[in-house]
Amino acid sequence: MTDLIAVGTRKGLFLARSDDGRRTWAVDGPHLLAQEVAAVSIDTRRDTPRLLASVLYGHWGPTVMRSDDMGASWQETEDGAIRFPEETGAALGRVWQLRPDTLERPDVVWAGCEPHSLWRSDDGGDTFALVRGLWDHPHRPTWQPGAGGGAVHTVLPDPASDRITVAMSTGGVYVSEDGGGSWTPRNKGITAQFMPDPLPEYGQCVHKVAVDASGPDRMYAQNHFGVFRTDDGGISWTSIADGLPADFGFPVVASPRTPGTAWVVPLVADMQRVPPEGRLRVHRTTDAGETWTEVGKGLPDADWTAVVRDAFCADAQDPTGIYVGTRDGCLYASADEGDTFDLVADHLPDVLAVRAATLP
Amino acid sequence: MSVEVVLPGFLADLAGGEKHVKVEVGDDRTLAAVFDLLAEGRPLLDRRIRDETGALRRFVNVYVDGEDVRFDQGVRTPVADGAVVQVLPSVAGG
Image (tube, rainbow over all chains, first blue to last red; front, top):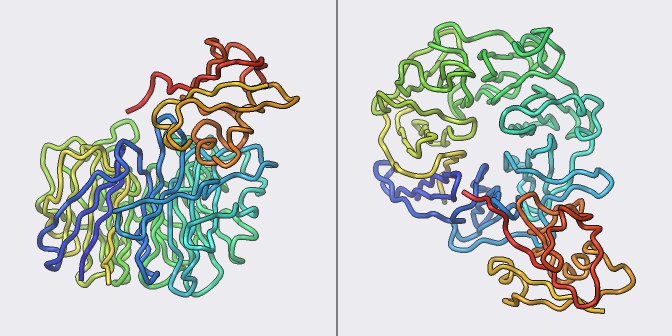
């Protein structure tokens, strides 16, 4: 059994493997050298596990690469796996999220893209179709780009129903209960300090959303200021930021195994995107955000870096592994739910995406 | 009529290794038509040069007989018989 960490960076993809139960890691790469890899997924639902990578060439535009041999070779769909229909007049800017659906839908993969759009693949990521229900939503023209661009960056399909939750910057949280046909904003209680109405129906800059292990109705949101929880599928959100040293940040990760457990990586503020006091730390809740505990022994002091929205993930092991990639090119791994971290790699390009899986 | 498309090494790899590609142009004598014909059988090459709307990618520069088409008519720039269309990566990267 091999544990794999896929690390997308500004200048390529790195892979870290462990064959000793996550105690030591061997890093190889860069794969896809000099290309930005803003999203990566490890699809273990297939007979042969597949890597999918969002690639952005500096000159030559965006594409999706796939590898069925763990990075030894890469293929792409010649006409483009993601290609806006001509009548939209739009062009793909960047793929921000590649999300394999659940075991119940083994060929389905979702992509969240810039400009704000959601895409569905029914062939494992070879080709994607634009989800017109979201693209044609009357709100879409008013969704504004965040600093990194306007995109759907989070896609959360529910394994037990046709519910799909997406999050975007900006725009906020939208939910479809019919597989993507129709969408409603679900942001009540999430603040937007950059808008005249701090509690708008939509338009929030939700940085990341994670689904609790208890089921799809409970989710956590790391917002552009504010950390929130919903217990009703996003219909209403309440602040769970008390106890954190700062309520700004990008990622939030929920335990895939333990209800009520989640992790965030606070940063001081939008205009100070550094850890409080220059100490990179993870904060963990085990009671759905009622209380938070600073964890992360082994993470650096005097480190004025940041962790972006997809550079933080959990694996499905017991105990849960937590993986942190930083903008200063470090990768840290914890095999004990965040209590302690080991440095897996450093001096990488800035880390944009981290995903972990156990290969059969 | 025919025009010659000159590709940088990275893109030549997507054209069977050819850095100089002859394209036979019909009645539509525009740069867009040249790229449409170049794209036949080479969709990956086309995607590196143009996005799906047909626009030149931001950091791809194209010169027709030495003139930057961005200062002419972009992809609607006329091409004459024997023209040389040169594709170059711009000053960018990382």
